[in-house]
Length: 166
Image (cartoon, rainbow, N blue to C red):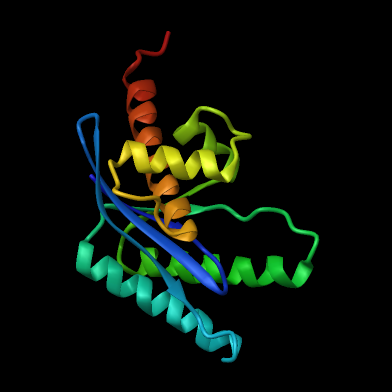
């Protein structure tokens, strides 16, 4: 199963692709989509959507996993983040893919085993789990973590569904 993880942002949207083969996680690609803050916001959303659509077309993932919105004291930032998430979700849905959402707490729990883990712990664990030569760019690393979270969640859901109900 190939999974596209997305860490949405209005300025930088991270993406990471992993393939799950049995119990193995294989790194496929990762990177970041940078938008020009000098451009109008709809153009930035178009760039996020278009770039993710190209990534989906190139790598043909089986599912998309997106980090869920966090709460922010800055309402404008939260709204822009929500719109960037929307562009990412629509890119997956328009490609006919199932889209799954995970909170930062769920992602950290799945990757590090601690929902309160520091960002550096998550980045280091991503490097180890995927046997990367170096720590990925921050947003790309977060996106890889979301993809790994989904890979682990799919396994748990399969095991949970396989247990006979009493």
